[in-house]
Length: 439
Image (cartoon, one colour):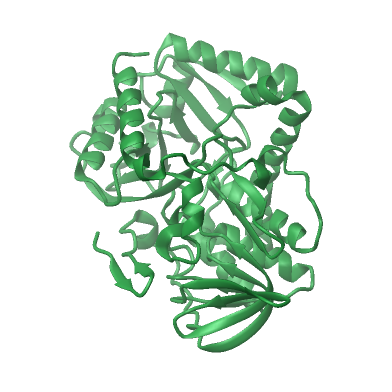
């Protein structure tokens, strides 16, 4: 993947994904030229930035959205389209470390995040987003991880009142997945799936139709304060605003204006493969309920059926470029779960960056009196980033929403930042070893 440098702006190719090949046509937005003014300038036209623009505009204020590429070019258009009401840190862990009230508040935030996706899809009429809320199964690969998953589910029922969680035995998971490699699992209703690129393009189109100015191919190369406000400078224009929102997540280092945010994130490259369409008889046997699925290994894999294709993904320390070895590892893992796919060709292979934080939760709030941010979704960003737009609008209005552990003051910078990539590779290698020996 070659990068093209123009000043302090890095331009990268788009993902050759299933989503890009099946998405609605992208609306063309203008490039910013000259000077314009706004109440809020938003950097990044992914889920976070577009949701923020929508909710800010509903408040009667005027946002302007500046996107370095096109809406959805980054993680919002590259992800697996899985919607879950969770954080990488479990609610039980939150309860143990921070108390019941905090665990309850984080549980509320998580479920609000999945609900807002449904609200936005409905409000903007994004039928092509193909949103489902059929649930997710966590499939256990051995008895140890099954016991842990069941203990967690029992705790959720008892302490969070999550009565809809269901325990599945080996046959139940086999009926769900069409695979007999799992020993059992847990079904979490309310989760779902979406066509992520159609979702973000639908948001962009809907927000623009309501009068919000969105500019594409307009990287912010400098963000500076001036008396009474803040100025976002782009190669061909400027925006003067009262406040700014940084909504660039793992792609913050594309320009110097937001690169400092990258020092709060640990980059994991998430790779995804999608098969050719399955023969009808096979498609009917694999994942017939249309849910999404994860497994319990440390180097967690997830999978779902989309348009009679198996879409299969996972995280790995794959560096700054696509990696054939990573795709090969995914295919091997997929065939291990679904041996019938051994001879079926892959149609798509792509990857993108996941923003991980030291404390395993996203963060939102103020950098200073004029600049806000939300980022660090830890691999569960479709729903959470959509919700963060609503909370960002509240901060813009001068409110202080209760965001629990997501509060900006808790965000830590990465120590020894230049060593982050070797450290990620080392941790990933250890996880792979532990998975290989069944621990």
